[in-house]
Amino acid sequence: MATFIEIKKAVKTFGKLQALNGVDLSVQKGEVVLIIGPSGSGKSTLLRSINRLERLDSGSITIDGESVTDEGSDIRHIRQEVGMVFQSFNLFPHLKVVDNITLSPTTVLKKSKEEALENARRLLAKVGLSEKEHAWPDELSGGQQQRVAIARALAMNPKVMLFDEPTSALDPEMIKEVLDVMTDLAREGMTMLIVSHEMGFARAAADRIIFMDSGQIVEEAPPETFFTSPKEDRTRRFLEHIL
Amino acid sequence: MAKSSPNSERDHKDPPRPTINITDGTLIPLKDEGGLLSSWNISFFGAIALLIALPLFSPDPYLRILAFVPDGLFATFSVTLISICFSLVIGLFAGLGRISQRAWINRIATVYVEIIRGIPLLVQLFYIYYALGPLLKLQGPPAAILAMSICYGAYMAEIFRAGIQAIPKGQMEAALALGLSRGNALRKIIIPQTIRVILPPIGNEFIALLKDSSLVSILAVSDLLRRGREYASTSFRYFESYTVIALIYLVMTLFFSRLVAAMEERLRHRGNVH
Image 1 (cartoon, rainbow over the protein chains, first blue to last red):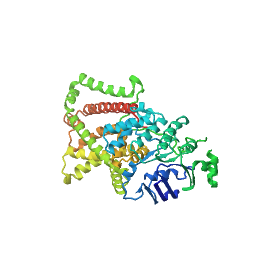
Image 2: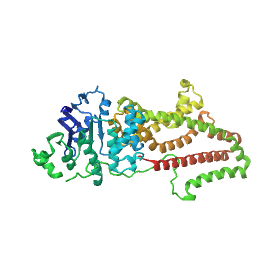
Image 3: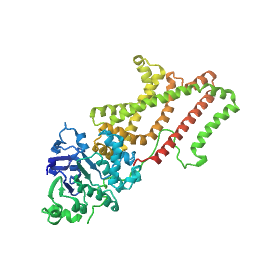
Protein backbone atom coordinates (compact mmCIF):
# COMPACT_ATOMS: atom_id res chain seq x y z
CA MET A 1 0.00 0.00 0.00
CA ALA A 2 1.12 3.48 -0.80
CA THR A 3 1.41 6.31 1.67
CA PHE A 4 -1.47 8.64 0.97
CA ILE A 5 -1.23 11.29 3.67
CA GLU A 6 2.18 12.23 5.02
CA ILE A 7 2.46 14.56 8.00
CA LYS A 8 5.94 15.59 9.08
CA LYS A 9 6.93 17.47 12.24
CA ALA A 10 3.66 19.36 12.40
CA VAL A 11 3.78 22.25 14.87
CA LYS A 12 0.94 24.63 15.68
CA THR A 13 0.43 27.00 18.58
CA PHE A 14 -2.56 29.09 19.56
CA GLY A 15 -1.20 31.85 21.74
CA LYS A 16 0.38 29.98 24.62
CA LEU A 17 -1.27 26.68 23.82
CA GLN A 18 0.91 24.21 21.98
CA ALA A 19 -1.75 22.39 19.97
CA LEU A 20 0.65 20.34 17.84
CA ASN A 21 4.13 19.66 19.04
CA GLY A 22 5.95 17.84 16.27
CA VAL A 23 3.51 15.28 14.93
CA ASP A 24 4.58 12.69 12.37
CA LEU A 25 1.93 10.52 10.83
CA SER A 26 1.46 8.65 7.61
CA VAL A 27 -1.79 7.18 6.44
CA GLN A 28 -2.07 4.50 3.75
CA LYS A 29 -4.66 4.52 1.01
CA GLY A 30 -7.84 2.87 2.27
CA GLU A 31 -6.76 2.99 5.87
CA VAL A 32 -9.17 3.95 8.64
CA VAL A 33 -7.35 5.82 11.38
CA LEU A 34 -9.02 6.82 14.61
CA ILE A 35 -7.49 9.61 16.68
CA ILE A 36 -8.31 9.75 20.37
CA GLY A 37 -7.02 11.77 23.26
CA PRO A 38 -8.08 14.15 26.02
CA SER A 39 -9.57 17.48 25.01
CA GLY A 40 -6.91 19.99 24.10
CA SER A 41 -4.57 17.23 22.98
CA GLY A 42 -4.42 18.61 19.44
CA LYS A 43 -6.42 15.93 17.67
CA SER A 44 -8.91 18.31 16.05
CA THR A 45 -6.14 20.71 15.13
CA LEU A 46 -4.27 17.87 13.44
CA LEU A 47 -7.35 16.95 11.44
CA ARG A 48 -8.09 20.54 10.48
CA SER A 49 -4.51 21.05 9.32
CA ILE A 50 -4.95 18.35 6.71
CA ASN A 51 -7.23 20.56 4.59
CA ARG A 52 -5.62 23.74 5.89
CA LEU A 53 -8.53 25.00 7.94
CA GLU A 54 -5.60 25.56 10.30
CA ARG A 55 -2.22 26.67 9.02
CA LEU A 56 0.77 24.94 10.57
CA ASP A 57 3.51 27.04 12.14
CA SER A 58 6.04 24.58 10.78
CA GLY A 59 6.20 21.09 9.37
CA SER A 60 4.66 19.72 6.21
CA ILE A 61 1.64 17.77 5.04
CA THR A 62 1.20 16.10 1.67
CA ILE A 63 -1.84 14.32 0.30
CA ASP A 64 -1.24 11.97 -2.62
CA GLY A 65 2.02 13.79 -3.25
CA GLU A 66 0.44 17.25 -3.28
CA SER A 67 1.65 19.65 -0.61
CA VAL A 68 -1.01 21.16 1.63
CA THR A 69 1.39 23.33 3.56
CA ASP A 70 3.16 25.03 0.64
CA GLU A 71 1.74 28.53 0.35
CA GLY A 72 1.84 28.18 -3.41
CA SER A 73 -0.17 24.96 -3.57
CA ASP A 74 -3.67 24.91 -4.99
CA ILE A 75 -5.48 24.45 -1.69
CA ARG A 76 -8.91 24.57 -3.28
CA HIS A 77 -8.02 21.64 -5.49
CA ILE A 78 -6.81 19.68 -2.49
CA ARG A 79 -9.95 20.51 -0.51
CA GLN A 80 -12.07 19.14 -3.31
CA GLU A 81 -10.49 15.77 -2.71
CA VAL A 82 -10.70 15.90 1.07
CA GLY A 83 -14.20 15.54 2.49
CA MET A 84 -14.81 16.90 5.97
CA VAL A 85 -17.54 16.21 8.49
CA PHE A 86 -17.88 18.51 11.49
CA GLN A 87 -19.08 18.03 15.02
CA SER A 88 -21.80 20.65 14.54
CA PHE A 89 -22.84 19.36 11.06
CA ASN A 90 -22.61 22.85 9.51
CA LEU A 91 -25.32 22.23 6.97
CA PHE A 92 -26.27 25.40 5.09
CA PRO A 93 -29.56 26.36 6.76
CA HIS A 94 -30.85 28.47 3.86
CA LEU A 95 -30.57 25.60 1.39
CA LYS A 96 -32.71 22.48 1.21
CA VAL A 97 -31.07 19.12 1.84
CA VAL A 98 -30.60 18.39 -1.85
CA ASP A 99 -29.19 21.85 -2.56
CA ASN A 100 -26.73 21.44 0.29
CA ILE A 101 -25.43 18.38 -1.53
CA THR A 102 -25.41 19.72 -5.09
CA LEU A 103 -23.99 23.18 -4.31
CA SER A 104 -20.34 22.30 -4.43
CA PRO A 105 -20.44 19.84 -7.37
CA THR A 106 -22.25 22.41 -9.52
CA THR A 107 -20.27 25.43 -8.30
CA VAL A 108 -16.79 23.98 -7.99
CA LEU A 109 -16.75 20.98 -10.32
CA LYS A 110 -19.09 22.67 -12.83
CA LYS A 111 -21.23 19.56 -13.07
CA SER A 112 -24.61 19.87 -14.75
CA LYS A 113 -27.65 20.27 -12.47
CA GLU A 114 -29.02 16.90 -13.62
CA GLU A 115 -25.82 15.03 -12.98
CA ALA A 116 -25.38 16.61 -9.55
CA LEU A 117 -29.00 15.91 -8.66
CA GLU A 118 -28.76 12.28 -9.71
CA ASN A 119 -25.61 11.87 -7.66
CA ALA A 120 -27.23 13.63 -4.67
CA ARG A 121 -30.18 11.23 -4.80
CA ARG A 122 -27.85 8.25 -4.93
CA LEU A 123 -25.98 9.55 -1.88
CA LEU A 124 -29.16 10.34 0.04
CA ALA A 125 -30.27 6.74 -0.58
CA LYS A 126 -26.90 5.57 0.65
CA VAL A 127 -27.27 7.43 3.96
CA GLY A 128 -30.92 6.37 4.20
CA LEU A 129 -32.54 9.77 3.73
CA SER A 130 -34.09 9.61 0.27
CA GLU A 131 -37.39 10.96 1.58
CA LYS A 132 -35.70 14.08 3.01
CA GLU A 133 -34.52 15.45 -0.33
CA HIS A 134 -36.66 18.58 -0.08
CA ALA A 135 -36.50 19.07 3.68
CA TRP A 136 -34.86 22.08 5.29
CA PRO A 137 -31.89 21.26 7.53
CA ASP A 138 -33.65 22.53 10.67
CA GLU A 139 -36.45 20.05 10.06
CA LEU A 140 -34.04 17.15 10.55
CA SER A 141 -32.79 15.50 13.71
CA GLY A 142 -29.12 15.81 14.56
CA GLY A 143 -28.38 12.32 13.31
CA GLN A 144 -30.14 13.02 10.03
CA GLN A 145 -28.29 16.31 9.63
CA GLN A 146 -24.98 14.60 10.15
CA ARG A 147 -25.85 11.94 7.56
CA VAL A 148 -26.72 14.70 5.08
CA ALA A 149 -23.39 16.33 5.92
CA ILE A 150 -21.63 13.06 5.08
CA ALA A 151 -23.55 12.82 1.80
CA ARG A 152 -22.61 16.43 1.03
CA ALA A 153 -18.93 15.68 1.55
CA LEU A 154 -19.15 12.49 -0.53
CA ALA A 155 -20.76 14.40 -3.39
CA MET A 156 -17.33 15.81 -4.22
CA ASN A 157 -16.08 12.26 -4.67
CA PRO A 158 -13.24 12.76 -2.18
CA LYS A 159 -10.23 10.52 -1.87
CA VAL A 160 -10.15 10.88 1.88
CA MET A 161 -12.72 11.74 4.52
CA LEU A 162 -12.00 13.63 7.73
CA PHE A 163 -14.44 13.31 10.63
CA ASP A 164 -14.08 15.81 13.47
CA GLU A 165 -16.01 14.34 16.42
CA PRO A 166 -18.94 13.46 14.16
CA THR A 167 -21.11 12.05 16.95
CA SER A 168 -20.17 14.27 19.89
CA ALA A 169 -23.12 16.63 19.43
CA LEU A 170 -25.64 13.83 18.98
CA ASP A 171 -28.13 12.31 21.37
CA PRO A 172 -27.16 8.72 22.17
CA GLU A 173 -29.96 7.16 20.15
CA MET A 174 -28.76 8.91 16.99
CA ILE A 175 -25.12 8.00 17.25
CA LYS A 176 -25.57 4.54 15.79
CA GLU A 177 -27.21 5.71 12.55
CA VAL A 178 -24.21 7.94 11.85
CA LEU A 179 -21.66 5.30 12.82
CA ASP A 180 -23.40 2.78 10.56
CA VAL A 181 -22.92 5.08 7.59
CA MET A 182 -19.28 5.54 8.54
CA THR A 183 -18.76 1.80 8.93
CA ASP A 184 -20.18 1.25 5.44
CA LEU A 185 -17.78 3.83 4.07
CA ALA A 186 -14.85 2.15 5.80
CA ARG A 187 -15.84 -1.21 4.28
CA GLU A 188 -15.96 0.33 0.83
CA GLY A 189 -12.30 1.21 1.21
CA MET A 190 -12.54 4.95 1.86
CA THR A 191 -9.45 6.44 3.47
CA MET A 192 -10.69 7.94 6.73
CA LEU A 193 -9.26 9.96 9.59
CA ILE A 194 -11.63 10.18 12.50
CA VAL A 195 -11.43 12.10 15.74
CA SER A 196 -13.83 10.25 17.98
CA HIS A 197 -14.19 8.42 21.26
CA GLU A 198 -16.57 5.82 19.91
CA MET A 199 -14.68 2.76 21.03
CA GLY A 200 -17.20 0.29 19.66
CA PHE A 201 -16.74 1.83 16.24
CA ALA A 202 -12.98 1.82 16.73
CA ARG A 203 -12.97 -1.92 17.32
CA ALA A 204 -15.31 -2.64 14.43
CA ALA A 205 -13.96 -0.41 11.70
CA ALA A 206 -10.59 1.15 12.51
CA ASP A 207 -7.31 -0.21 11.21
CA ARG A 208 -5.26 1.84 13.58
CA ILE A 209 -5.73 3.94 16.68
CA ILE A 210 -3.64 6.99 17.44
CA PHE A 211 -3.52 8.30 20.97
CA MET A 212 -2.57 11.95 21.26
CA ASP A 213 -1.74 13.99 24.32
CA SER A 214 -0.27 17.49 24.64
CA GLY A 215 0.12 17.88 20.91
CA GLN A 216 2.05 14.69 20.42
CA ILE A 217 1.31 11.16 19.30
CA VAL A 218 1.88 9.04 22.38
CA GLU A 219 1.03 5.66 20.97
CA GLU A 220 -0.38 4.02 17.89
CA ALA A 221 -1.52 0.47 17.35
CA PRO A 222 -4.23 -1.69 15.76
CA PRO A 223 -7.42 -1.62 17.88
CA GLU A 224 -6.97 -5.02 19.54
CA THR A 225 -3.41 -4.36 20.65
CA PHE A 226 -4.30 -0.83 21.61
CA PHE A 227 -7.12 -1.78 23.93
CA THR A 228 -5.69 -4.99 25.38
CA SER A 229 -2.03 -4.18 25.80
CA PRO A 230 -1.22 -0.49 25.56
CA LYS A 231 2.48 0.20 26.04
CA GLU A 232 2.44 3.67 27.49
CA ASP A 233 1.36 4.69 30.97
CA ARG A 234 -0.48 7.74 29.70
CA THR A 235 -2.49 5.61 27.29
CA ARG A 236 -3.47 3.23 30.06
CA ARG A 237 -4.58 6.07 32.31
CA PHE A 238 -6.66 7.57 29.52
CA LEU A 239 -8.25 4.26 28.64
CA GLU A 240 -9.21 3.72 32.27
CA HIS A 241 -11.19 6.95 32.06
CA ILE A 242 -13.11 6.24 28.91
CA LEU A 243 -13.61 2.46 28.94
CA MET B 1 -18.81 0.35 25.92
CA ALA B 2 -18.17 3.83 27.16
CA LYS B 3 -19.04 6.96 25.29
CA SER B 4 -17.65 10.38 25.73
CA SER B 5 -20.11 12.84 27.16
CA PRO B 6 -21.95 14.41 24.25
CA ASN B 7 -21.49 17.82 25.79
CA SER B 8 -17.84 17.59 26.63
CA GLU B 9 -16.67 19.69 23.70
CA ARG B 10 -19.48 22.19 23.79
CA ASP B 11 -18.85 23.52 27.25
CA HIS B 12 -16.71 26.36 25.98
CA LYS B 13 -19.75 28.08 24.51
CA ASP B 14 -20.57 31.38 26.16
CA PRO B 15 -23.35 31.32 28.71
CA PRO B 16 -26.41 33.27 27.62
CA ARG B 17 -25.99 36.92 28.44
CA PRO B 18 -28.81 39.34 29.09
CA THR B 19 -29.36 41.51 26.04
CA ILE B 20 -31.16 44.76 25.54
CA ASN B 21 -32.87 45.63 22.33
CA ILE B 22 -33.12 49.32 21.55
CA THR B 23 -33.60 50.79 18.11
CA ASP B 24 -33.19 54.38 17.13
CA GLY B 25 -36.14 54.38 14.75
CA THR B 26 -39.73 54.37 15.83
CA LEU B 27 -40.60 51.61 18.22
CA ILE B 28 -41.15 48.43 16.25
CA PRO B 29 -44.65 47.34 17.18
CA LEU B 30 -44.80 43.93 18.78
CA LYS B 31 -47.62 41.63 17.95
CA ASP B 32 -49.58 41.28 21.17
CA GLU B 33 -49.12 44.78 22.37
CA GLY B 34 -52.40 46.23 23.53
CA GLY B 35 -54.58 45.11 20.61
CA LEU B 36 -56.82 47.89 19.30
CA LEU B 37 -55.41 50.41 21.75
CA SER B 38 -51.77 49.65 21.09
CA SER B 39 -49.48 52.65 21.13
CA TRP B 40 -48.94 52.18 17.41
CA ASN B 41 -52.66 52.23 16.64
CA ILE B 42 -53.24 55.29 18.79
CA SER B 43 -50.39 57.23 17.18
CA PHE B 44 -50.97 56.12 13.60
CA PHE B 45 -54.73 56.42 13.39
CA GLY B 46 -54.71 59.45 15.64
CA ALA B 47 -52.36 61.23 13.24
CA ILE B 48 -54.47 60.24 10.25
CA ALA B 49 -57.65 61.35 11.98
CA LEU B 50 -56.08 64.74 12.72
CA LEU B 51 -54.87 65.08 9.13
CA ILE B 52 -58.46 64.53 7.99
CA ALA B 53 -60.30 66.43 10.73
CA LEU B 54 -58.18 69.59 10.78
CA PRO B 55 -58.72 70.54 7.09
CA LEU B 56 -62.36 69.49 7.40
CA PHE B 57 -63.17 71.76 10.32
CA SER B 58 -60.67 74.49 9.59
CA PRO B 59 -59.95 74.54 5.86
CA ASP B 60 -58.08 77.80 6.20
CA PRO B 61 -55.19 77.30 6.63
CA TYR B 62 -55.05 73.48 7.00
CA LEU B 63 -56.42 72.61 3.58
CA ARG B 64 -54.09 75.15 1.98
CA ILE B 65 -51.14 73.70 3.84
CA LEU B 66 -52.10 70.17 2.83
CA ALA B 67 -52.28 71.27 -0.77
CA PHE B 68 -48.96 73.06 -0.60
CA VAL B 69 -46.56 70.73 1.20
CA PRO B 70 -46.94 67.32 -0.57
CA ASP B 71 -44.72 68.61 -3.38
CA GLY B 72 -41.94 68.16 -0.87
CA LEU B 73 -42.76 64.47 -0.44
CA PHE B 74 -41.15 63.72 -3.78
CA ALA B 75 -37.86 65.30 -2.70
CA THR B 76 -38.02 63.61 0.69
CA PHE B 77 -38.58 60.19 -0.81
CA SER B 78 -36.11 60.50 -3.65
CA VAL B 79 -33.35 61.70 -1.32
CA THR B 80 -34.22 58.87 1.09
CA LEU B 81 -34.45 56.10 -1.50
CA ILE B 82 -31.39 57.08 -3.51
CA SER B 83 -29.34 57.58 -0.34
CA ILE B 84 -30.41 54.23 1.09
CA CYS B 85 -29.35 52.45 -2.11
CA PHE B 86 -25.93 54.10 -2.17
CA SER B 87 -25.47 53.59 1.55
CA LEU B 88 -26.22 49.88 1.14
CA VAL B 89 -23.51 49.55 -1.50
CA ILE B 90 -21.03 51.56 0.57
CA GLY B 91 -22.07 49.64 3.67
CA LEU B 92 -21.60 46.23 2.07
CA PHE B 93 -18.06 47.01 0.96
CA ALA B 94 -17.11 48.84 4.14
CA GLY B 95 -18.65 46.04 6.20
CA LEU B 96 -16.66 43.43 4.27
CA GLY B 97 -13.64 45.66 4.77
CA ARG B 98 -14.24 45.69 8.51
CA ILE B 99 -13.89 41.90 8.62
CA SER B 100 -11.21 41.65 5.95
CA GLN B 101 -8.11 39.73 6.89
CA ARG B 102 -5.99 42.21 4.96
CA ALA B 103 -4.85 44.66 7.58
CA TRP B 104 -4.82 47.78 5.40
CA ILE B 105 -8.30 47.22 3.97
CA ASN B 106 -9.53 46.57 7.47
CA ARG B 107 -7.89 49.76 8.70
CA ILE B 108 -9.33 51.94 5.92
CA ALA B 109 -12.85 50.62 6.52
CA THR B 110 -12.58 51.04 10.27
CA VAL B 111 -11.23 54.58 10.01
CA TYR B 112 -14.08 55.48 7.67
CA VAL B 113 -16.66 54.14 10.11
CA GLU B 114 -15.03 55.85 13.08
CA ILE B 115 -14.77 59.23 11.40
CA ILE B 116 -18.24 59.29 9.95
CA ARG B 117 -19.96 58.03 13.07
CA GLY B 118 -18.12 60.59 15.13
CA ILE B 119 -19.41 63.61 13.20
CA PRO B 120 -23.03 64.75 13.38
CA LEU B 121 -24.94 64.35 10.13
CA LEU B 122 -25.83 68.04 10.11
CA VAL B 123 -22.14 68.94 10.25
CA GLN B 124 -21.40 66.48 7.44
CA LEU B 125 -24.11 68.09 5.32
CA PHE B 126 -22.63 71.54 5.92
CA TYR B 127 -19.18 70.19 5.20
CA ILE B 128 -20.03 68.69 1.83
CA TYR B 129 -22.30 71.53 0.72
CA TYR B 130 -20.50 74.58 2.06
CA ALA B 131 -16.94 73.60 3.02
CA LEU B 132 -16.31 71.40 0.00
CA GLY B 133 -18.79 73.33 -2.11
CA PRO B 134 -16.18 75.26 -4.12
CA LEU B 135 -14.38 71.98 -4.80
CA LEU B 136 -17.28 69.63 -5.54
CA LYS B 137 -19.59 72.24 -7.06
CA LEU B 138 -22.65 70.20 -6.18
CA GLN B 139 -26.23 71.42 -6.20
CA GLY B 140 -28.35 70.93 -3.11
CA PRO B 141 -29.94 67.55 -3.89
CA PRO B 142 -26.76 65.74 -5.07
CA ALA B 143 -24.83 67.16 -2.12
CA ALA B 144 -27.57 66.00 0.22
CA ILE B 145 -27.59 62.52 -1.29
CA LEU B 146 -23.81 62.28 -1.19
CA ALA B 147 -23.65 63.32 2.45
CA MET B 148 -26.48 61.05 3.55
CA SER B 149 -25.06 58.07 1.62
CA ILE B 150 -21.59 58.45 3.09
CA CYS B 151 -23.02 58.93 6.56
CA TYR B 152 -25.49 56.05 6.48
CA GLY B 153 -22.94 53.88 4.67
CA ALA B 154 -20.95 53.85 7.89
CA TYR B 155 -23.95 52.71 9.90
CA MET B 156 -24.84 50.12 7.25
CA ALA B 157 -21.26 48.88 7.37
CA GLU B 158 -21.69 48.06 11.03
CA ILE B 159 -24.94 46.25 10.30
CA PHE B 160 -23.31 44.19 7.54
CA ARG B 161 -20.32 43.46 9.76
CA ALA B 162 -22.47 42.36 12.66
CA GLY B 163 -24.71 40.36 10.33
CA ILE B 164 -21.83 38.51 8.74
CA GLN B 165 -20.22 37.85 12.10
CA ALA B 166 -23.53 36.52 13.40
CA ILE B 167 -23.23 33.61 10.98
CA PRO B 168 -21.51 30.70 12.75
CA LYS B 169 -17.86 30.24 11.79
CA GLY B 170 -18.59 26.65 10.81
CA GLN B 171 -20.56 27.85 7.78
CA MET B 172 -17.49 29.38 6.17
CA GLU B 173 -15.36 26.39 7.17
CA ALA B 174 -17.83 23.93 5.68
CA ALA B 175 -17.94 25.92 2.46
CA LEU B 176 -14.14 26.14 2.22
CA ALA B 177 -13.79 22.44 3.06
CA LEU B 178 -16.05 21.68 0.10
CA GLY B 179 -13.59 23.46 -2.16
CA LEU B 180 -15.50 26.72 -2.61
CA SER B 181 -13.48 29.87 -3.05
CA ARG B 182 -13.81 32.50 -0.33
CA GLY B 183 -15.76 34.72 -2.74
CA ASN B 184 -18.19 31.95 -3.66
CA ALA B 185 -18.58 31.02 -0.01
CA LEU B 186 -19.47 34.64 0.79
CA ARG B 187 -21.88 34.96 -2.12
CA LYS B 188 -23.64 31.63 -1.82
CA ILE B 189 -23.44 30.79 1.86
CA ILE B 190 -22.68 33.77 4.07
CA ILE B 191 -24.43 36.73 2.41
CA PRO B 192 -27.79 34.96 1.84
CA GLN B 193 -27.92 34.07 5.52
CA THR B 194 -26.73 37.52 6.49
CA ILE B 195 -29.52 39.22 4.56
CA ARG B 196 -32.16 37.53 6.69
CA VAL B 197 -30.46 38.73 9.82
CA ILE B 198 -29.91 42.30 8.68
CA LEU B 199 -33.15 43.10 6.85
CA PRO B 200 -34.92 44.35 9.99
CA PRO B 201 -32.06 46.62 11.11
CA ILE B 202 -31.75 47.91 7.55
CA GLY B 203 -35.46 48.67 7.66
CA ASN B 204 -34.84 50.65 10.82
CA GLU B 205 -32.04 52.58 9.15
CA PHE B 206 -34.41 53.36 6.31
CA ILE B 207 -36.87 54.87 8.77
CA ALA B 208 -34.11 56.78 10.51
CA LEU B 209 -32.87 58.08 7.15
CA LEU B 210 -36.38 59.13 6.17
CA LYS B 211 -36.50 61.26 9.31
CA ASP B 212 -32.95 62.56 8.95
CA SER B 213 -33.70 63.56 5.37
CA SER B 214 -35.50 66.55 6.88
CA LEU B 215 -32.01 67.94 7.58
CA VAL B 216 -31.47 68.48 3.86
CA SER B 217 -34.07 71.25 3.92
CA ILE B 218 -31.23 73.55 4.94
CA LEU B 219 -29.38 72.79 1.66
CA ALA B 220 -32.05 74.39 -0.49
CA VAL B 221 -33.68 71.05 -1.18
CA SER B 222 -37.44 71.40 -1.42
CA ASP B 223 -38.31 68.52 0.80
CA LEU B 224 -41.34 68.15 3.02
CA LEU B 225 -39.95 70.25 5.85
CA ARG B 226 -38.77 73.02 3.56
CA ARG B 227 -42.17 73.25 1.91
CA GLY B 228 -43.69 73.63 5.36
CA ARG B 229 -41.16 76.33 6.18
CA GLU B 230 -41.92 78.14 2.94
CA TYR B 231 -45.64 78.12 3.68
CA ALA B 232 -45.11 79.23 7.24
CA SER B 233 -42.81 82.10 6.35
CA THR B 234 -45.24 83.60 3.84
CA SER B 235 -48.43 83.04 5.85
CA PHE B 236 -46.97 83.35 9.36
CA ARG B 237 -49.00 80.25 10.26
CA TYR B 238 -46.11 78.57 12.05
CA PHE B 239 -48.10 76.42 14.44
CA GLU B 240 -50.43 75.05 11.77
CA SER B 241 -47.71 74.46 9.17
CA TYR B 242 -45.39 72.56 11.44
CA THR B 243 -48.25 70.58 12.96
CA VAL B 244 -49.14 69.26 9.52
CA ILE B 245 -45.48 68.52 8.72
CA ALA B 246 -45.04 66.65 11.99
CA LEU B 247 -48.20 64.60 11.40
CA ILE B 248 -47.13 63.63 7.88
CA TYR B 249 -43.70 62.48 9.11
CA LEU B 250 -45.38 60.55 11.90
CA VAL B 251 -47.75 58.73 9.55
CA MET B 252 -44.91 57.79 7.23
CA THR B 253 -42.51 56.51 9.87
CA LEU B 254 -45.21 54.60 11.72
CA PHE B 255 -46.36 53.03 8.47
CA PHE B 256 -42.84 51.89 7.59
CA SER B 257 -42.13 50.66 11.09
CA ARG B 258 -45.18 48.42 10.81
CA LEU B 259 -43.82 47.14 7.48
CA VAL B 260 -40.46 46.37 9.07
CA ALA B 261 -42.19 44.57 11.94
CA ALA B 262 -44.19 42.45 9.49
CA MET B 263 -41.01 41.61 7.60
CA GLU B 264 -39.28 40.65 10.83
CA GLU B 265 -42.19 38.41 11.73
CA ARG B 266 -42.11 36.68 8.35
CA LEU B 267 -38.38 36.13 8.53
CA ARG B 268 -38.76 34.61 11.96
CA HIS B 269 -41.26 32.09 10.66
CA ARG B 270 -39.29 31.20 7.60
CA GLY B 271 -36.05 31.69 9.45
CA ASN B 272 -33.90 28.65 9.03
CA VAL B 273 -31.09 30.55 10.61
CA HIS B 274 -29.87 28.89 13.75
